[in-house]
Image (tube, rainbow, N blue to C red; front, side, top):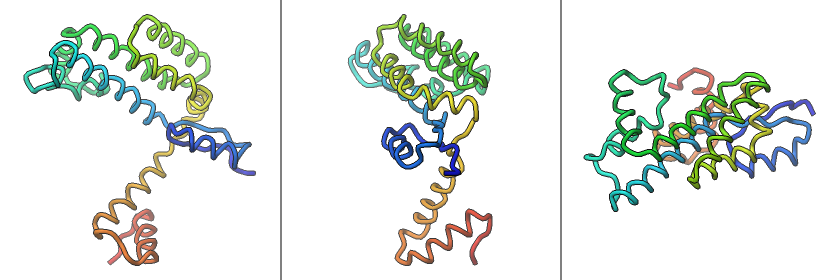
Length: 201
């Protein structure tokens, strides 16, 4: 009864479970997973365009493949040289330029802090998606529309599940270091010690 918010991945199963077991809690979707979906959209378009234009998979000689990671990076974090390389990629294929613009609209949407700005950015994103015929963009927008309520909760609260993701990664790393485990109690204690900032002897 006291749980007010739950931050989750973009999983319909998670959302259903929360709604059934915590009906009073509001759900916030982790923005990291939204960006992950947007980056996947860019990768799908890049691969499709490579097959359509070159009739093969990307190779190192192709700028769009060689510098493919730049397509998923935050523009403000790139160096001047990296920005020039990114421009080379986007100018080489109009569809990549358009889909990159859609991805940036999604990022701008997630930067908003109030409902009014969210609605404005949403309208810009919707307009850009409607202006293109690319199925990848339309598929992403359908997904965002299905998660719009949860996105609004994130915009208002900025709640994510980063802490639980970090704890999960710690548990996985411990398991890898130990090449698996046989003693569950021992494994549990080590996880508690690591997440508390301590290290077992």
